[in-house]
Image 1 (cartoon, rainbow, N blue to C red):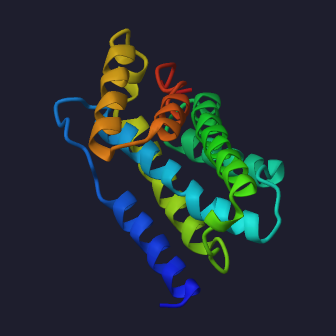
Image 2: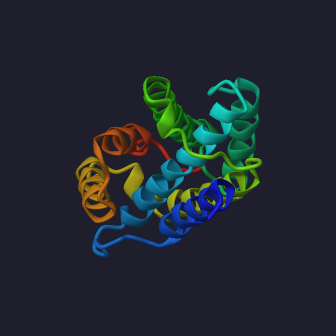
Length: 190
């Protein structure tokens, strides 16, 4: 199998694994939300490989702001606080950036470990768009709980469950904790 075909197979495997719900805790209403956040984090791998091979910067403030503005508009349309939604997704973006920086550091120290990169970011962006929609839907569905005092323990349990079910390594455990850090807040209508 050529390197390019091997990379495509690996990217497809990541997205298939990420797309498969790994929610084992059906009693926790935040389980699907946290699992969607974990799936979104998984997109960091092919994106980092692309950026490495294309010699692109990890952070793209213009694109990130465009994404946050779009998500804030969608939040407003769904009766959610756009500032809250922007904070939640800023946490996601920061966690993904941290994963990408870690991969860059790994590859700088071990260039032989660099995976073949995808041709472009279309598959990753499509997955991210789909997961953004799922996360917004879950926020809307759970808006009362996200603003309630019992949110923090439920969120912590959902994070622990997702870490266990998805077998997340220490990098992804830290990233998931960071990516979900602002979920317990004001998700009520504007």
